Image (cartoon, rainbow, N blue to C red; front, side, top):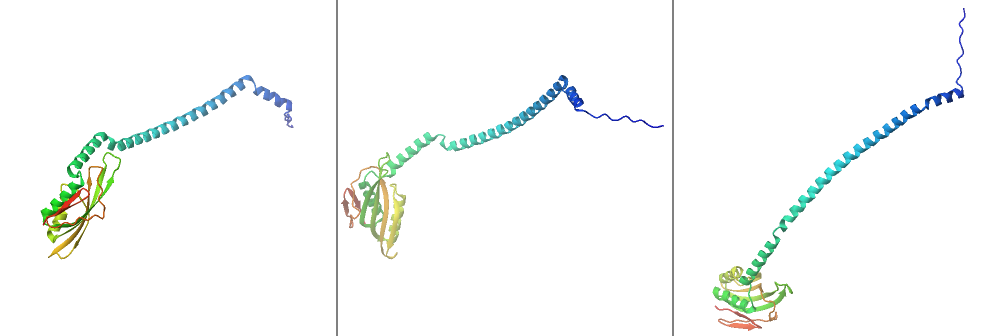
Length: 230
């Protein structure tokens, strides 16, 4: 008995078209659109979550940076708190210092030098004064007075005189001193110093002016007077 096999029918182009038409029915197209929309929505949701997390991290970093900036600004502003009161206090202290320790005229300077020289028992043989305005045009305008002196006497009194200038109620700045001679005998001292006058106008004394002083004598150059006694 022989088996009979039926031949496999070949797929024709017309049957493929019919199958495609069968798949592209309205129901299948509807479900395909639903699936596509679901994929688009899923992508949009994922993208929104990513953006939300990025924005949250950025906002947190920005807030931290703003806090740091604000804290730094507060620290920088600390020295400025109460600045008006500090300026007023500094101005009062400067005015008090000016009236208590700065001379009003060059004659006051010369008189104070003469007093200190006489107190130590040394002799002032030469003195020159060189004025120069400072802080011109401001409310605190002063006149700087540079003084170059030569004194003679025993070593110890001359050293004490230097200390007297440094501690005197009148403000003096020692610019330099030169001692010549032996400590056991008479010593010559060249003392250079400066002070400041409160007034803004001063009769200038030439730098080359010399004020030789003998025992118990005084001399005047311009309106400056210096005296010394032994």
